[in-house]
Image 1 (cartoon, rainbow, N blue to C red):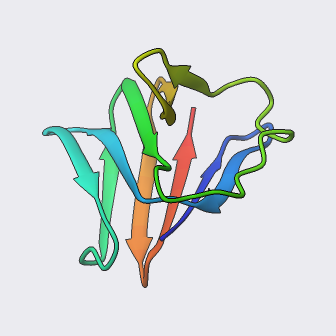
Image 2 (cartoon, rainbow, N blue to C red; image 1 turned 135 degrees about the vertical axis):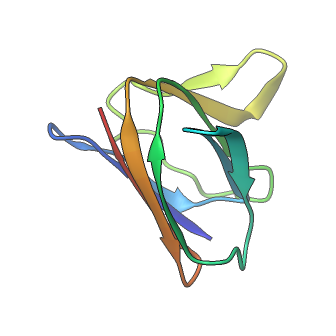
Length: 97
């Protein structure tokens, strides 16, 4: 599925991913391919981006915001203060602060 993370300042991430885990208002939840369409508000927390099946991921335009997990270099994290997420037709858009 395709993930795009956008802030008021820049596009922080734009690429195909395996899954994404986000801090929802009712707790953390994960989205995989073919997830049902949703719109949700996000709380302060960590977005986890899983890229295990992706071979051609470019990190030049990530603006230094994403960090690799020490235990798994194919999982990236991004701390957010709040945000909104929408998933539809295997495209996830996160508007983050």
